[in-house]
Length: 110
Image 1: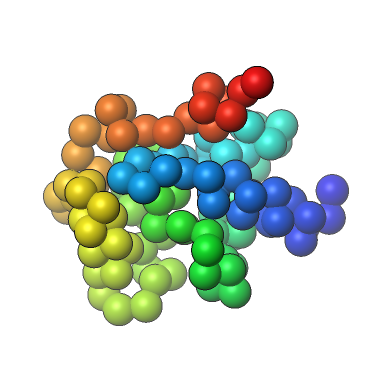
Image 2 (image 1 turned 135 degrees about the horizontal axis):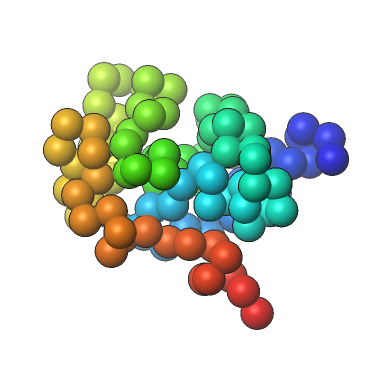
């Protein structure tokens, strides 16, 4: 699969993450049948600036850490966007991560 084709699929999944919920790079990769490609999902999120409809701020690492925050303009934009959706973030860590986690394998299964 070409990188841009993979990125487009990542953007399609990410655009379905509901307001006030979060998922992980690995969960998106697993849903796309590329379980070992969490880092590539991260690269897609880093390049998502051309796709303003993709809520990249809702994609975090598997522990709920805002590891991609330095790719957002401003010092705290990723955290501010999450907090605007009612998600509590303390020291770059999403609070109540398990209850906010959106798993595309469960949510998008037929």
